Figure 1 (cartoon, rainbow, N blue to C red):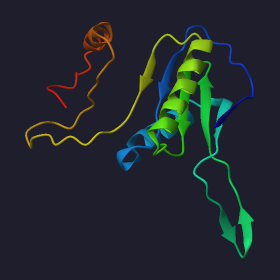
Figure 2 (cartoon, rainbow, N blue to C red):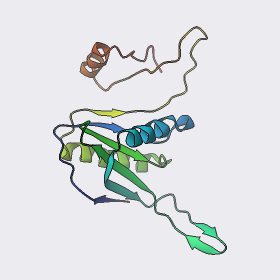
Figure 3 (tube, rainbow, N blue to C red):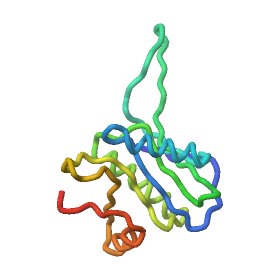
Figure 4 (cartoon, rainbow, N blue to C red):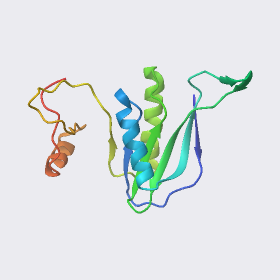
Amino acid sequence: MLGLKIHTHPKLKKPNMIAALPDMGNVAGIGMDFLIKKLKAKLFAEIYAFWPPAVSYENGLLNYEQSSYKFHYSQKENLIFFSGEFNPSDPRRLYELCYEVVDMAKKLRVNTLYSIGAALRQPTPSEPKEVLAAATSAKLIDRLKKEKIQILPDKG
């Protein structure tokens, strides 16, 4: 079960959205934290999650910190950011969260939604370390190629 809380409504015109959750080595989480801080993005909404079901304690005093996923925006860059502290392990929870993000993108008339993440890929020693992209349509692949972004090769 999720709960959406909107703190303010950003005034953006067909913004792009970048979404990321912690992944292998927390590469996406670190990248997203960097972007949000560097662009001084402002929090405008949160999705409260009721997982993981855990509490912490200090000297016998219990502390329950409800986790949340956050939406930030940068007016200057016309960008929306979506991030969170953890990636749901249950696929149903992950899909539920993704539907909320896509719904928010629709409400804000997002032009393109990008996601960032790391994946385990064993390049050959001669291959340079680089950023690779994949897309959900041939049209988006063409757009990425025009920007000189290398497309993830082969099959996987």
